Length: 489
Ligand SMILES: NC(=O)c1ccc[n+]([C@@H]2O[C@H](COP(=O)([O-])OP(=O)(O)OC[C@H]3O[C@@H](n4cnc5c(N)ncnc54)[C@H](O)[C@@H]3O)[C@@H](O)[C@H]2O)c1
Image: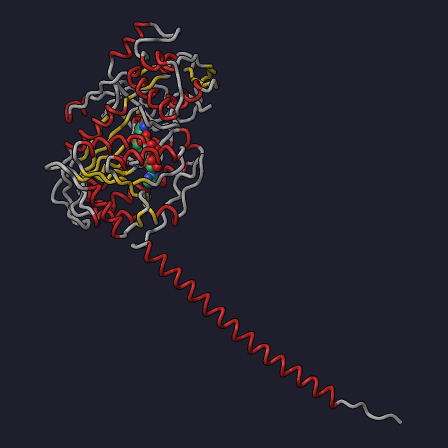
């Protein structure tokens, strides 16, 4: 007969194990609570630090262009820091903003320039600052084209005392802050998604900057700013679209745009009418015609033709369809456009609306002007001048103009701007391109034969006669849109 098994030891062992398990789980619980407590504390500290640096809270903004180089910066990298590295909203940031916006001449203006790191924005900001006006820049430094060029312009501006806030025109909180800090008398609104053909690749970027961004700016100017500023803004010759009457005059039809870019600029003109009508904002739209010059835009034909010719690459040049006139543009030199912008600012009347978006006291000024050169130049002539300036023969690939939004011909009638503020373009294409080429080779450290760079306006390539050169050089003229004359190669 066997004995019953002795279970007392097993039971004891089990009790002991269960005791150990309880002790362990209590310890584990205590340790994890500590960990959770510490992580929460750390997260709270990081949040407090973030909010302190980023006051006032800035709304998300960038998404606009998307673009060949890179997508827009994140909220953190774009909204927290502005140009000189000062935190937006901090005391040193406000000091820089005020200093930059303060006029240094009796009766001087205080101008907010949007798109200040852009081609036209930089030149206008420098000219305003030079004559003693206060200028504050605003730009999101997007990567539609190489942002290092925009940074280069920013350095130039900074040397002249113009501070550029890094931010987006869709950022309502940032705009409110700027209008709170500075009683701007004027806004020169140049920030936009430019370029005609890029609209087929990234249409939303045009809606974001040219329509949504414009409305955000107008809202702030109408309802937040005290006093309401007068606004001068960049429309475009592209609004003439399929208009065939020449030269283009402000009274011609603008209801048949040929590109989404043109449609957003036309929409801008209609939106301007609304804000003028309801809120009494003084608004002046300027229809620029193919602006070119030093520090210009790399997406435009004169710029990338220069680059490609110097690199021995083929350039694609458009020829017209049978029976149509040669593809031509009313190239306008940047200095002439700057004079036009300043003339428009100088003659802009005050807005008549009550701050806070209240009822207007009376009708406010609403204007639209062509700013062109009044002398269209065929693309073949543009190439000939560049060949002469660069001392290199271009390798041309001549193709039929595709349906990509470009219009074949632009030509401005500028008599309205001439009558109202004495606008008178004075730079012919050969002279202007010589200045551009000089800047281009200096900027890129390229050496070209001295004779080429300095004798451009009097020389000509085999394809252009002397009389042609003189004719171009003798005119001061017209038109344009900011598209190029050829396909990008
Ligand atoms: N250059 C031309 O031939 C031409 C012709 C017709 C019209 N325009 C108009 O003139 C204005 C200036 O043109 P540009 O040639 O100097 O172009 P640009 O691209 O060099 O300058 C525009 C600047 O605006 C900035 N920007 C774009 N979207 C922004 C946003 N949402 N918030 C803040 N900044 C933003 C860009 O970073 C850029 O620096 C634009 O409105 C353009 O549409 C130009």
